[in-house]
Length: 261
DNA sequence: ATGCCCCCGGTTCGGGGA
Image 1 (cartoon, rainbow, N blue to C red):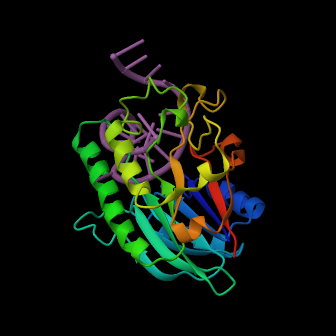
Image 2 (cartoon, chains in turn blue, cyan):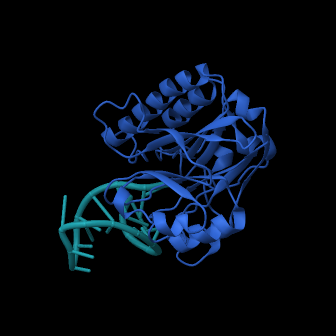
């Protein structure tokens, strides 16, 4: 089962690139972030025409997450279970069959950016990561394969950013954000990318400004975190840089992993 | 030090992104 994650920065604008990605990468499940559209504006028919079903949690203009899949999604959860009165569209999860009698729980999540550090936005980011960790403890108790996929807006180490000094006080690199991310991972999750790639300076995001893509000056902030049962089955993981090179690209590019059945 | 670029809608600027 091939599972991909991609912050598309508007699913409507990026639809041609998304259709290309589906055709070229042939994923079974795709986790989207920053869809930036209401659910009834989601381009479901165009995706259905190439064999994908859609489960979406959107809002107007900002945020928005979705799951695309070849097989039907079951037990769809919209929003973190412990989200209280937080109505920002940042989490959707569902269970998918692996085609061999097994099942995998997949979440598409979009952690708040949190800039500038030290503001209420930063506090919201840290609180959101804490809520995600609390929910992850419940998921772990189920002892099943699951993948928490998405734009974490956290650059885990200085090896994951082109200029750690320039970014040290950014909300993506701040110690508090890294600490919350580490606490999440240390519950027992595995960073799928680092199972297969140990080299530093591999990125999933390149800012639109200042020619960052052309200089390969980016950050690794999109992650696939695996439960122990999923980590035992992971057969491959990589970043697909091709979509970022296109005209009118998202500032993020897809990351994917393959779980062996 | 700031902005560069991109997307959205209350559109022709400001908010948010990261």
